[in-house]
Length: 276
Image 1 (tube, rainbow, N blue to C red):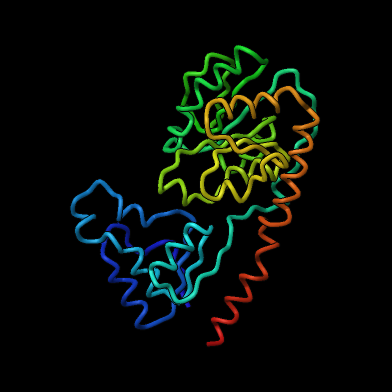
Image 2 (image 1 turned 180 degrees about the vertical axis):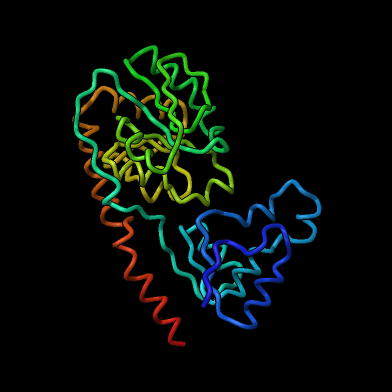
């Protein structure tokens, strides 16, 4: 039995998966809405020749592993034989809880790749407003990228070894997203990372963010600029609220989003498939 991550040859027809399905069993694993690379790609040939490529890969698979319900729904529509949902997980040994410190200057932080920096564009006027009314700084864990923030901006180059230490420098973690098809398929990994470190979070109510954030318990969901300003303002002003949300968030992650907590169910599925 072979496990495929998304697809074998991107932007080529699913001949390799078809051949594999004839000679072996395979599972396919999705933690992003890669099917939108085909059905919403601004490329005439891709749209014409392969709009349903990933649907075919899902349908031929013996099992589809989906990172969230949005991806699961697509697999169901594709006619997948069997589907299991496994969230993106973290290693709790690596992610330590942040020490509770009442900072005079509150650090709002975001971690991401250069390709997702665009998600911060709508946040710039919000952050600038907060800068004018509160003592804050912004921590960007991304690389050498910058945003047009008028206040104290610290930019840290992302490394796998240093990402947890970078998150631990934050007081509040944010995950803004637009309401687009690709973003609805995201698995809220940033939120899981923040919460694993005991941070309160504010996020857009898009996709799996709605499952990870319990509004008013471990963070806030915010849509409009006014909601973002209100949510961040409450957390900036209230250290007890930050501490309470952070503890509740870490508790949820340790219960639902750890490697150890999901390993046994995954192993059981693999063992069952191996005996067929």
